[in-house]
Length: 473
Image (cartoon, rainbow, N blue to C red):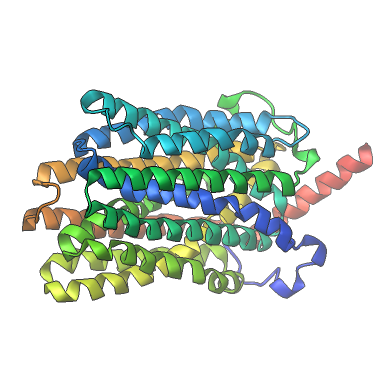
């Protein structure tokens, strides 16, 4: 059934009982500040930190990220399934949030604090273990955290509000990561040892703050007891159900395509600023030009999603993002003084559109999880978000691997002016590649049919089943 334009649940008509309080939204979103900071700082700087400071070959770092993605093929689904199966007085999600605190803090510090005495193969091993362990630790947090959001409300539009505020929190963390980039840029002028010390200091501070924010969420949030024990079978059956869910299957493909394109902003922006724009000091400003509109556009996307529908609005945002990134391919052919203004303008439009994906995407995913309950009678949010988290990591890994090999084989030489061949290779990855990815994603997602009208019908059936079950007891 196609998505209806009918405004079935206008914001003003949402019953007070179904609206989430700000205490709940704040507690849910707060850890996103720390997680957003860690994820983006790792995406933004780990490649440059490794190649320019630690002097590890780009292809080697690309291989490390490739190995980490293979490990994620095991850890993400396993963590999601265990989260679904957990029965504990803290709940099946908050227990895992609590467990994740120490591993996240220790592994993040490990990645950004390699001992100065290490070099060669031992340094490579240190970074490989640190990166793989960090992403594994983050899985213990991200999958249960996203799953918990799916349980906090069943209202079609209220969950967009919840995930919209979560997106804002993650973006605030990302903006702080960009601000930290200025510290790294300043440190690079003073030498590798200063960069190492800066990285260690920031990693310690970030780890402590993230630990406090996750603990706050565990303390403040509550879970639904009736969702515990609502999954049967084994991991194979759970993930088989995910793939058999036609809405989930389509969104898995769309998410992979979209995230591959989105990963360029984190992986390549510093390279574009340094070697195409010719001014590394602009790198953080370019990312801020993307992040700030992504944050402040959220209040705009929420009412528009009620007016035009979540699915149609997300498709529109993908097309806008494609056009914005596509404009980047002209950078090497512009006058040097015009390149900065060009990329800033494109970044603003891409960022504003990204705010829609960050707000609407998880909300649509949660609708799909309710559709799975409609089909199977089970609640396996962890299994679903594990798959989507795995897709996100795979997409980012593909982009990092591709970047490493393209840079190395195009003739890239660290800390030197690059040839036109290298500059073109960089902007093809930065502009043309995401342009194609986002257009393909929009075309694929136009086939998605779980809109508001269909969701309301499913929700009525689920609510009726719950009433019948309570009556039978």
